[in-house]
Image (cartoon, rainbow, N blue to C red; front, side, top):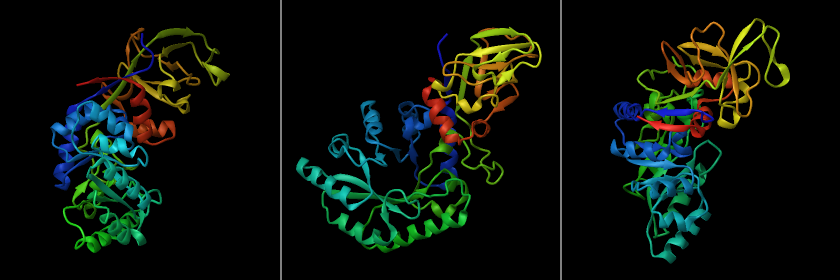
Length: 367
């Protein structure tokens, strides 16, 4: 038996989610496929998204963009955070996001030496406090970038701080600041795509749509909101199911400790299934005595501490359990489902971390 889990990715669900977002916003889609498409596999996901007509892709760093190029993907690829490797950005025809004048000047010098014109997007910090031109300097700074003739501004973007819209007033303030700068630039620059909307804004802030939207989590079928009833995201279809199999089944007498530290001791004669997955595979140690898996459509609780390579679950009372039986860690089995939101709450984190860690470390199968 292989260690770890298998991640089954339904690309048809991703196509459905893309179509849903297009229908809601009526805007071109900049599809965020950073962090290996949130653990779903950037190459296969990007190929499907391009087939379905996305406007462009967005990755975090240079190496992610190079990997897509070397896989034969020739669409526009935004590189959101890279500040080094500028000659490689030019060589691979990637579109960097400019955060400050120093980066713009260095890129301009590289492009000039190579005899190239480079398309860029400009990042404005409207309240994230992370990267980008400060609002009070953005107008003058962008005019200076326009003077760098080998750089061609194709887009201007910002990033919403309240990704789950916990504070809509703050998000609206960011949008207003961004629109104010756009209006100031209208006479200075033409043909620029302005974008700020993330997955949460797609479903909650129509004012944010502007020229394009930039969804990530929602593309893969997951709600960006902690409260699933706050905004209507029922049309989203989760694209990931994570599975493993039972490695071994053990019959333990009442009073037997399970795993390190004896944090669980059987309160009855018990049937314990050992799974070939642990925290080295992205199954969080915080799920010790806290998580659940699905076996034969029923919930089996995690017992004892999650180990580096193994996890134990109590299958006492689940009829007909055998070694090799399918175990669903994330997703649906029968009439029950462990959602990404529920899994994240059990693990004490957020869905993004679950997808990128568990999905990213599993062997993938596409359908």
